[in-house]
Amino acid sequence: MRWFVRRDLDGFFGLFVDNLVQLLLIVALCGGLCGMTGEDARFLYAYILPGAGVSIIFGNLFYAWQARRLARREGRDDVTALPYGINTPSLLVFVFFVMVPVYRETGSAEQAWRMGLFACIGSGMIEFIGSIVAERVRRQTPRAALLSTLAGIAIGFISMTFALQIWARPILALVPTAIVLITYFARLRFPWGVPGGLVAILVGTLIAWVAPAEWVQRSMSGADVRSAWEQVGLAWPVFAGGEILSVLRQPPEQWLRFVAVVVPMGLFNVIGSLQNIESAEAGGDCYETRPALAVNGLGTMIAALLGSCFPTTIYIGHPGWKGLGARAGYSTLNGIVITVICLTGAVALVDKIVPIEAGMAIVLWIGVVITAQAFQATPREHAPAVAVGLFPAIAAWGATLVFGAFDLAGGSTIQSLIEANPGANVSGFSLHGLILFERGYIFTCMILAAISACLIDRKFYRATVWALVGAAVTFLGLTHAYQLSGNVVDYLLVFAAPEDNVVAFRAAGIARGYVLMGLVFAACGAYAARSSKALPGAEHL
Image (cartoon, rainbow, N blue to C red; front, top):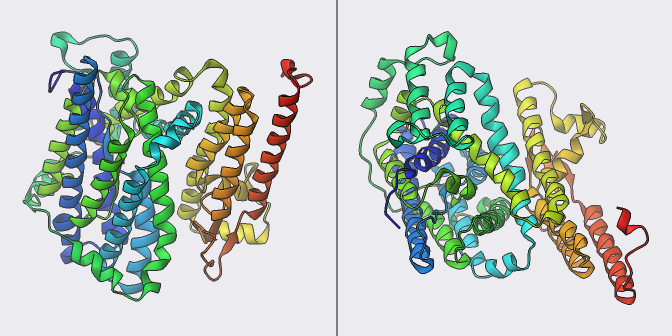
């Protein structure tokens, strides 16, 4: 397999846009919420971004090498590397539930940064340790359970997110969208074999600079470009291991409380990466689980040791990149370009030259392909199981919208509504139900889809095991349990005491419900073992 093929450009632009969005989020959130502005902006541009850049190129190069190794072993030239970048959920959770609270308590951007490093390396260690048992978990889990979770995330957090932004700025974004759809749905090739993704980016950028600002709802300015250029400067990564040790030297009560954030996110990252590896195998590229996950964890630990607070992960979307025709070169090119941007602080410069809307359609298409794969790459009879597994992820998307709307409203809080009326709803949807379904939705998606797939195959005892797994993770507080303060929802692990003046929900009843489900499945298994006939009326269901 060649190091680089023409279609790698398409894959690069899609993955680059996704990574660039994460970098812009880091700059905006750390600057606006953690005090990393003015003199303290050095934590962003001298530590966090350079560390993130090194962690990204480390993983991108490994997964490109792994793809070429797989191609040599199987004698193929159509292997696509696993996509890789900064983990968006962990980024948001670590900012809002680790770094922001520390900054509010201390007023120190440096303390917030240090605690972020502690959270990041903890997550990386969990990911690395998880790689030891992950392959066994994957082999015992129905494919429908792994892929349905990705489909739910793809619908809500990828495709829907970008679709809303595309239609909010139609003049700027719909023309690139049309080009992407023509390229990948109609499979029309442009003259001289120019990649459709490149054409979409160029056309979108041209529209942004030529069309009136009121048409595109975005102002492109040469002065802004010059100002961003003046901020560019080389910053090499700095070892931050001593900063992490300084956190551990603090009184335990100052950092132990964040373990309740780090542990769930680390476990979710393991499961999410596992699902992405299964998605790649469903698309025809069978990667070794243990090294793929181990490097994922190592990349996160490297990020922390070099100053970045944000974990990296195997990205959702392998079938989309494969559908684009990308191979290994897109991963390598993305790693190089993102690292250069991070080491030079050129994030703002790229944003001022190329509008993010020009590349949104590529990521939108990736989400569509992921969703389609969940139904196409599983046994036909397991389609209902895939559908069941979508519910928790869609609920999580809805909960995210509700929380954001309440924050913007600036009036009543979700906490006050639930305290006044636990059955409160929004447009007919239970607020309490949205929140308990959103907590740990990656686990819930997988468990519900696995139970459904086992029942479709009449494997009642396996369904029992999955129901008991649901009971266990619920009892531990990894799913369904929550504590709510104002419009901020957090995990409530079994060993953690809820904070003062919050709404706390332990989910013990749901855990018992899972146990009862398991007993019902076991009873049906015993009945089926004694009879070769189907349950009465089952053939009509």
